[in-house]
Image (cartoon, rainbow, N blue to C red; front, side, top):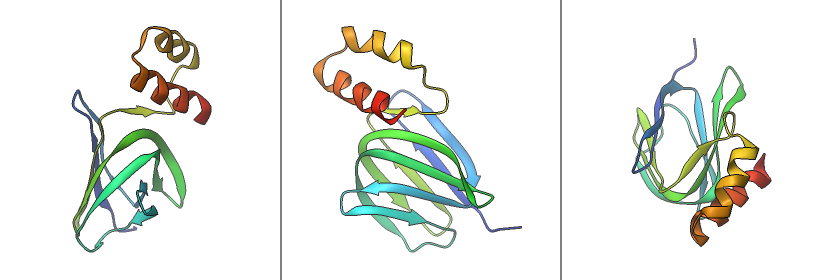
Length: 117
């Protein structure tokens, strides 16, 4: 059985993900970076992009974030983002309806999510 690292993705309103995974790939401000078990401690700024969760040698979850911070230790990675949407459960029709009434920053993020779907 492969080693695991504890992954958590939080926003101001909820904990979007919390589970043990093999690897997390995040959109850092200096480029994509991967986090494996026993990773060196790291605090990294994140850009808008897709966080990929890997299990069993493949991508199992894709979550669009709107920037934030990643706090990495040897046993965990915590991503703190202002906004995040799980792409596997996103409904494109609902997103388009929400864009119509959203403020500019929220609408910009939702349009990026729609483009990623």
